[in-house]
Image (cartoon, rainbow, N blue to C red):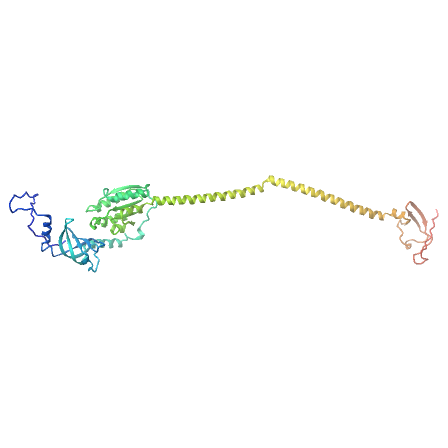
Length: 439
């Protein structure tokens, strides 16, 4: 930082230690604190200064007033720009911007600090440190260290989490509180490190490598609380970035606040805005798990009851089928069927016998009507040719002189044909005379 040196002999002290009490004299008097401020305010050089430096921690309050720090490699200067000057800015100062500022130096009485009250702020370019940051970011991005395809998914149910942070910082307590509240089952392995200063990058790399040597670390949290850009600069170191990339376990960064971005954030598998958010991202929420577990239990219970009902219904159907297919039931039905068939057979047989008996009686009646003896009893006779034994049915079958037998119902008689006369030749109703043959 370049500034005009303040030259004043108003207050002098011994370099070897505190000044001795002055001897009493009429010229000695002690100055009030406000008089020191008046000395600064009355200095013509401090009343009209141009200062060049690098913007850091620029903030604009809701009132419109702007507060920031100008710094160089050796020192820092707190600055204020009131609202009526800030509205004239055509650009918004960013972290690392190199600027030239005009204003005056005065003392903030309540805080007891001197500040540079700015009325003009000119953008001079990007500061050296910011250019270094951008150059490293561009180079690592070109190597693929920021590629989304390289990012590894976080384990859903981590059992062991490594934490790289300062053991005395508030960030560690925030992380432990979140883990204890959200997922108390997880084991935490703390790998202590410095989180700011010149030695911080080396210790961060050493702490990450120590966790990387353990075989059962599921995820690593690299974190520190908020601070200025200078406080967070250790996380912009190339060695830290490469240590994150070569970690076997996924790495979550929670460095600073939500508006702070470091090289470590770009290399990490997941960037969280704060250490607490990093812890929350590393583990599931116990309360959400309880809700999900209860929902799963309820669902499983419903499914189990539905399965039981289905199996009970199926068992009922199978039991009914078994009951219907019971051999004893089949035997009983078969026995009943046999009895029914036997009864039907008996009825059919009796009916058939009755029909045969009726048919036999009819045949017997017909045979009786055709019995020659019965016919003979009515006065008819049968004539047989004695020589041939054939019945004589026509007068043409015998000749005169033939001997015939005449059968009547109670015996036989012999006779000889004396003459014959066919019907229709003699007198109607005449009968041939018969004469018994000679013995």
